[in-house]
Length: 282
Image (cartoon, rainbow, N blue to C red):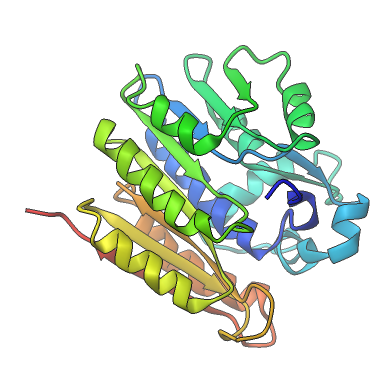
């Protein structure tokens, strides 16, 4: 788990979906004047250089954010997300990719708070340095799962939790659900966004079953794939599971997902999925 560096994967197709959903959810919360808490369980470094050794080694951003960079026409939600990435690259050439903490900090107001958890000994100092002068932000070298539960319910009574572990540990699949259930028990009205990779479809099927049996209502699943499911090594798709999604999210994703599948995978293997895992419970 501690060997994982997101710099290898920054800006890939999975980041595109994750951050599009994150931006939409935060925009919705910010429609009201009341303060908001943003909590990130696995914050990473917060900002990534696409000319770094990490990014150049894999080049994953080239089939992700780079394919959107020169597009002129796109769905509204994609355009909103892409506008923020452009703010991170004011000189126009795509050279940096913003992580979730950067995007959240860019959107949030002076009255809002950010709690960012990061255990990696190399990532944590980078994250701390990035927000050293931002009084809204607290960077914690602590386990994000435990930190999430301890922070609930937030004094603001409004907030968004992002859980996107690396899943290098297979226990992460069960841990995200266990954390969600405990946090939701304390703060049932919060928005919870869980990212997942599709490496073994069986694990995702088990994750969905566990969520359906959790007793939690209002769960939306969105998935974007770049190749068919396979027994080979590697991520073929990724998804976002959102608890208490904004009422606008499903329609925006219905517009965005097919466009992303076609644009990011011009060879024609792109695919997408959008469904309500759990609706309103009685």
